Image (cartoon, rainbow, N blue to C red):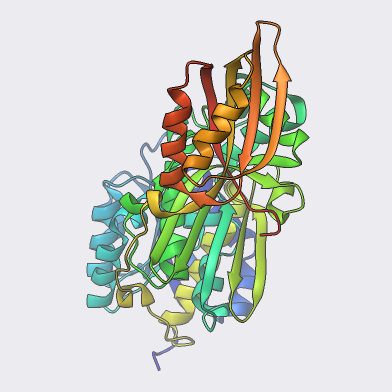
Length: 435
């Protein structure tokens, strides 16, 4: 067992929203943290962009602020580096150097782990150090540690979740108040739930990064971010929202992962979720992950997926875990280096139900021709809505039964070629009722 240290020192890389929250939480709950770990945690220094910026938390006299990363990474007295600057570079270089300098690392950097995690975990292993990353996926929601520890005896069959607060806020506003997408997005930016450039959130990339991390742990596999299919919510209109309501669904951006005999199916896309599903009630900036294990059955984790203190809660929990390892209380390492690469099922081979909204000329036999195009590809219908429009065209909404993606899209090509079809307005996947 390692010799117990009375004080363990931290170095923060970044003192922004999450960094300040982390520092404040350590200060506020320091006595409880010491009782739980048996060690005092001291924040020695913090890397910042500029020294003269007004910060939401005042620095202690012994907290050194610096604009030079070497002051933190090369300090022999610092035991744990907490990386909160985000992005790929220079975060990757800093984490690499920290591990090589014999320091454990805590990070909230989902982009970096999704793209370079395997390399970094191997560097950690080579240097007998660990990387902790609970805050990288669910903010304050415990997800990483339950998958690694509490649910480790289970074979995880599938997981699905709302893991991007920006898109969930936008879709909630569109659903509750019938706001158009552009209006809801602007309000999300004004409320601080969306960045000035929200493209990573809206196009599903943020959720895909998180899904790749979760799926790696859930399915003991090295997931390549490029194997996660992603789609945007930009095409969702209030009209789709209203039709979903009529059919007892709500539209959410879901991240879905499942393991089958043929491999892993990984995707992020807008989805019609049945009103009776637990994920249907997750609103605004809240996140949730719903998963099924062969022993535990169905489990859902729910809470705020972002914000200063929710994210700091996960960061500090990771710091405490690193402290326990340094002091010899636990001997955990990074299991991620043991993962194998599993085959990925292409989207064409996956099955789903589909929502299809289209406009057709007001002619006799139109629906019959649409039904024939679907039937020719073995696509059967579950629900049908038809709305007569004043412009002489009928708006038709169809929901299919489960079908292979390639079958549906072949049928859709046939429908598009019909003279009687004027517009294909939208296609959205549908979550099976009772799932």
